Length: 112
Image 1 (tube, one colour):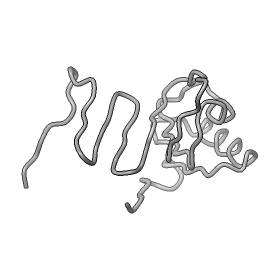
Image 2 (image 1 turned 120 degrees about the horizontal axis):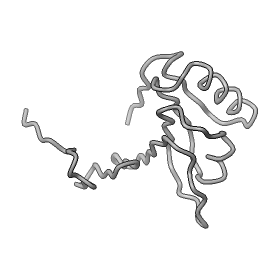
Image 3 (image 1 turned 135 degrees about the vertical axis):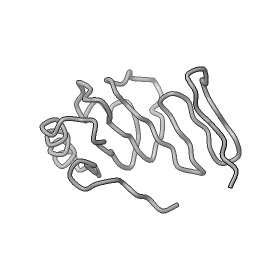
């Protein structure tokens, strides 16, 4: 199979028929994903996403994400501390938001 390098330090974005990405956003087929490592800024219009991946132990509350985006699920990746992951899981449960912790459950797999 042919391999192609899609991302380098100089790459600001990439797009083809089924995959588009910038530094913090990915669109793969019809799935839209944001990776957040800091508190999001509020926009007048909330972007619609399928997934938000929280990465790098940012100082944020789940309600910050709800205020900034429309989304279906939060994925807490394994780069976050266990106590922050537990805190966010509790916040998600309180707000009735679908949440997945990679630390607790292993790699997140989604069939497309």
